[in-house]
Image (cartoon, rainbow, N blue to C red; front, side, top):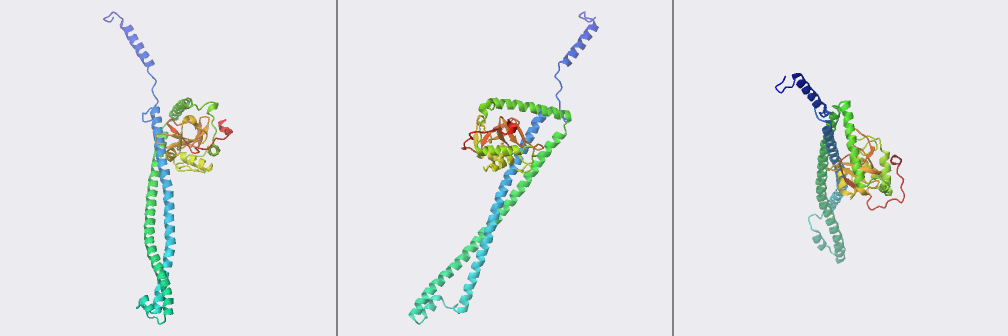
Length: 366
């Protein structure tokens, strides 16, 4: 008996039952990756890595655009310098002819005015004065062209060298940014490769559940469901959407803008370019320069921008769906607008253009 009069066998049984009950009511263990991180935390880290990769890719695209402009400036400076060298060579030939003429006349020792005064006949003097005036004008023009041309050549040579140096700096920056993107891509690949099939399944399920929740919130908050949400695009907006839908299935590749592969802003840039409207190449520039519209006013062709850094962009197709090149390792696809949880806002490349009077949704959206 115990000191309270309870048999020891009963007390022991009660303790064992309590222990079993406590174990039964403990929460199930959270599935973790091979280094002990919960799958939910891994999903957050993957999203951060995806955003960082998109930001690095956007920086690479900005530098690529700057490099292309710099190459054009360098080419123009070199072409202007080549043209000037031809003109300058002609001016030097004129100056040489002028010197040879003076030498052949033997009048190097006497100034032209003294030669004029030594003429015997007044008529000869008047004719000589007219000739002297013309000759002086030609000489002055030849000398002016030669001096101005040489000055211009020095300026253009300096400009061409500066443009070439700027081009080289941009090329070096582009290479560093390309390497940074590749490094981030390898981080994502290593993280995914470290997961077991069960963890990948759990990760996809968690991601799908979160996307569905974000999509419901967006559809409800911005009235994107129902017949009233079916806003008609402009003529060029409809063209941009049709082009984007035809690219579905093509692989994501950073820095690409077709025809075989795309990154996110490469797709939107090319779609609107094919529709006849030029927009900036990068998602950040698209967000910065195009007219902002409320999410509740979305119409097909508008661009939906994601992340605080505005480093991802998609083209709105209608019925709460976007076409985009989502991330490395994926392909162009039609997704819910909330497929990426962090929506920054929307912009309209065809602001001011009237919507079509009638519009039939493309087949994938019906």
